[in-house]
Image (cartoon, rainbow, N blue to C red):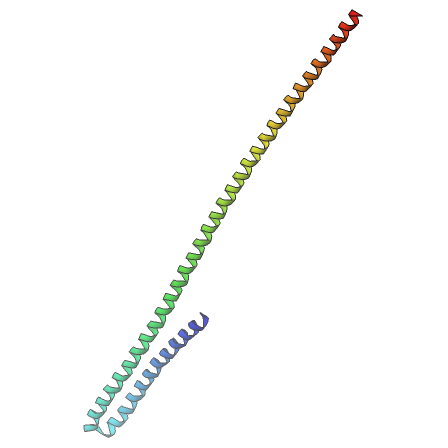
Length: 160
């Protein structure tokens, strides 16, 4: 990416240098033509004018090509930046959705753990109540057994 950007920047600089060079040549050519025109007026003037027009046309074409190349480089850089921005937004979107999904999964796990804890707690309470009821039942049976035994022993004593 860095190499590509440097290459595009290099192309832009070269194109700009070509434009400047073309302008310098144009100026230089005009100066030379004016000197020669003063020496050789007549037919030389018409030949020089046509040569100047050809040179200017050539330099104008070069300048236009350089401008087109600069525009292309700018366009490529803009598209690259746009693609990077789209990619960044896509990654951010995926990260956000993954974060939301993770939060939902954690919430579900927490709810499940809470429900499981409630079930275990109520089962434990029910087991404790059952054990207490059984203890009372057997305690009552034991007390009834002691009362019957005492009654039996009392009846035996009365008979004796």
